Image 1 (tube, rainbow, N blue to C red):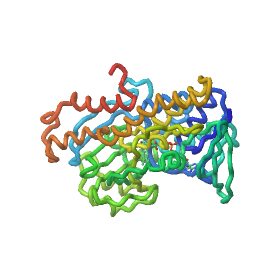
Image 2 (cartoon, protein in one colour):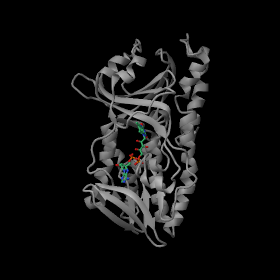
Image 3 (spheres, rainbow, N blue to C red):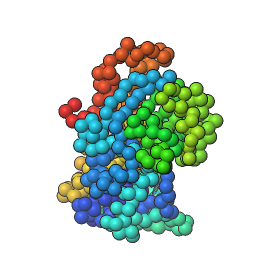
Image 4 (cartoon, rainbow, N blue to C red):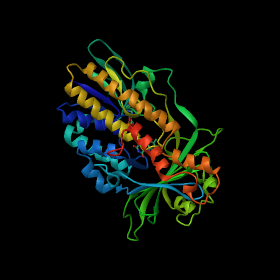
Length: 406
Ligand SMILES: Cc1cc2nc3c(=O)[nH]c(=O)nc-3n(C[C@H](O)[C@H](O)[C@H](O)COP(=O)(O)OP(=O)(O)OC[C@H]3O[C@@H](n4cnc5c(N)ncnc54)[C@H](O)[C@@H]3O)c2cc1C
């Protein structure tokens, strides 16, 4: 079977590796003329690590990142709300890892080139659209040199990300959803915060929120770490941030300037950045179908979601395994596409909508609601730790990484 994969990001490479496990040999076409280090930190939850282990990638990745011990929530005054153990420490078979996104991508790319051969990953191939007959699909690419190239395959899978050209052709009315939430992300060289293996959420998007976690354990001989931080602010009248371009402190720091707690100086952390980028927080509405004849969608092309629950990569990796197993097992490839869509479309749609309405930081929103947005004496005066655990558990259930026994 001749399988074309459009996009060599996390989904496309994981899918190529998944197909290779079943003896299939796809070709990956990516728009980028060459793969560069892009992005900042990424958190891989236990269900993402499970999929990476199946692909033989986890052993390579674990030493490159940090295994989180705990997740801790604070209000914007730095007051403690809720803490829980994470990953293996919470009974999962797999860890929760903080890692640089570029290292995750480079690991998958190296494995794909080793197993499929370098010629199976073609760069500088930007897909512009597709056409098809009863027996084949033709993809149209614009090459890095400007020439047009047509590629024919038996089936194709579009893994071309949040601004997917294939999705745009398949669903012309579909549009990017921006609700006024912008983000600024950076990495700082900083002393370990709390345990040095803590994933921190502080505040809410309405008043300004910070997400902070380490991604490299021992960065220098002074014991400092590489710490990833994300600032998120919702403003009704905000223009949408650019993608992946340099951030300007003036655009967001005024909100965080007085966030100096006895356990963390947030402005000092941000000012210690060695890299700072801006992104909009966007997603798209769940789709009524993913397959058009011989082509289907996967990863962010199928279900881009707010990055509020660390779930985008996990859902992409699960898509990749589900479809590679379906293609290996099915009598006909289009039946495999339908089985995959039946298993994944509604499930991922629920994660998209839950990331909008009740993401993990709903815990902080709840505490703010109960305290009227003011400092409180002790969180137990407002809500019990058990009630907060139930909020966390609800998200884990929807996203597919419920704790063993929950
Ligand atoms: C700011 C931010 C933070 C995030 N944090 C987390 C996190 O902590 N944990 C987590 O699990 N997820 C996180 N995510 C989500 C995660 O990064 C994505 O879900 C994941 O990268 C999806 O993989 P993908 O392969 O579908 O898309 P991508 O990784 O975006 O890859 C798409 C690929 O397609 C290529 N491409 C694009 N257009 C074309 C075209 N027309 N033709 C050919 N190739 C094309 C691109 O060059 C790229 O290589 C975050 C996302 C963002 C934006």
